[in-house]
Length: 379
Image 1 (cartoon, helix red, strand yellow):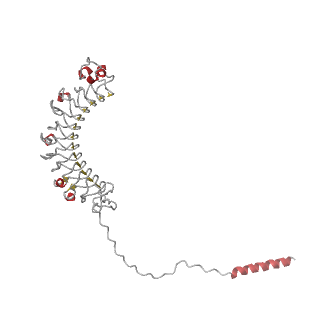
Image 2 (spheres, rainbow, N blue to C red):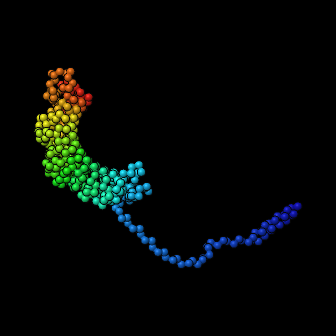
Image 3 (cartoon, rainbow, N blue to C red):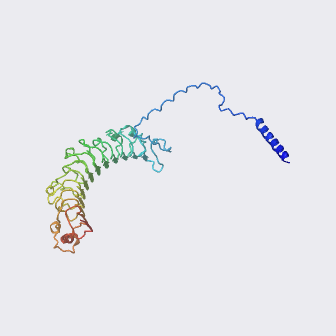
């Protein structure tokens, strides 16, 4: 039995060894791909560089409007069927004024990049009434422009680069806005024959006393508002028309007002002299005793006392001066012993601003007793 088991084990070992020796190794996969012959590459032509933009970088391309039912409508503008007499060309990045159709009465060209205004675009636009050229880069307006548009009533050229008032302005003009330019010159006769002008705005320019002669405004027989604020004036402008209602002279260097300056200004209702250099010495006692004056602004000056004013005044701004006291008895424009029931005698002052001075509450009783219409007082 033992011999049979050993014989069986030997036989199994012999068969196992035979299987090992007869096993063939598997062929390995090639590690490199077979090489193939490539065609030689043909050199491609160089791509030409794109040309540099012609316009400066702060000039975006013009914006073209949608197709219009009007064949004469410029591509850069909008022509609404609802307003056939209006040409809307604002905010279109325009450099040059397009040809204006003859049907146009209202022309809007504000907020563009226009540098000069020539006569050519206006050859057929003889019926233009309103031109808005605000916020461009205009440094020159050809005087021949206004010969083509004699019916012009409103001209807005504020926020540009003009150095002088344009010449040849049309006689029918009613409003002229030239604020925020660089104007330091008003040519002789610039406002001649402009008897219809009611508003002249020269705010925020570089005008000095020598630029305003005594005859500069003499032909403006209908002028109601004159704005000379934010210039470099040291004196009150001479020869202002008697028709004036509003006179704005804020932010200049005025330190003196002649005692008879307001005589003859029988319609003057609003005077603004904020941010000047006025002191008590430069103000004659009764210079503001004007029966038509309703609103007087003298803030941010060097006044040490409240100037005398007429009983018809309704608003008085005296903030940020050097006032240390206020005496209602001396200031009152009427006799406080008069009949208090007669309201026509009571001063009409309704608003008084005194903050920014050297005053402390309370308000003196004589001020309250005199100015019984006071609704607001700031101290």
